[in-house]
Length: 102
View 1 (cartoon, rainbow, N blue to C red):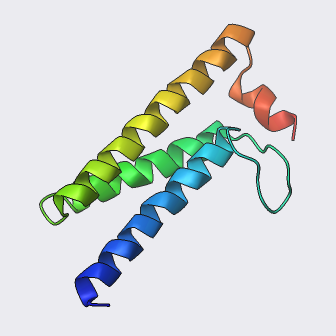
View 2 (tube, rainbow, N blue to C red; view 1 turned 180 degrees about the horizontal axis):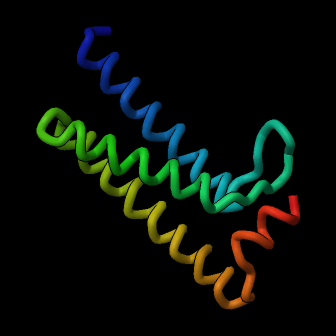
């Protein structure tokens, strides 16, 4: 495997890791370690912000496929995040309540 393919795979893995962390933190996926739904919207936002930062820092250095993949992952995560925040707003659940229930 050449260096470019290796770097592309590592980049995709990095994006997917942050995507999974964000989805677990939004309660969309079970935590494989605890086998429970662990919801922490602040951590989800940090994972999404990390991907946003990666998009900014790598602009002009990604293949068309990598850029499209990263953009789609970020868009999907942001839509899910907004959905989760709006659920909390509808139920009146605040960040303080969320952290005190842990």
